[in-house]
Length: 139
Image (cartoon, rainbow, N blue to C red; front, side, top):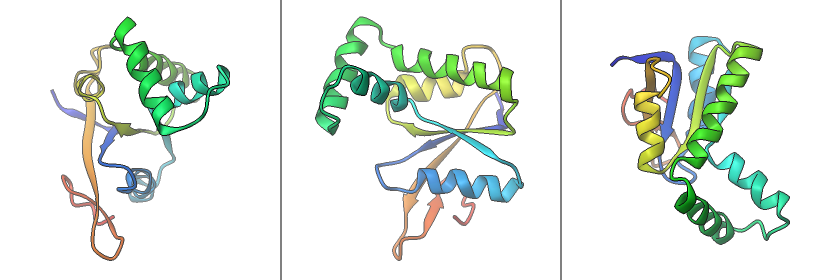
């Protein structure tokens, strides 16, 4: 399966520059990048339940809800992206928070039988420069 050049899955630890790479991808192609995150639905859920907005709360609630449905956050994001694609026709889609295996797997397979996302791993270099360790796109 080949990756779709309009779909990017950005991987890397916290503060590694994944959102910065999304901006650089947009600059490189001269197109607007719609940024998405699997965690956005979780953050909205925590806020809606009026729970403390802490890392621990996000982690614990995220895992509890995954026990009921393993792909809950994947399914929510997939629906969001499909709705946005139909309504706004984004040039480039970038998912900026791939952390779980099922998230990566979904990006690679894209259950709707379209071509998968191009995976870029972000890393912060000495001096604070951002670099994609896969494509070396001089970020």
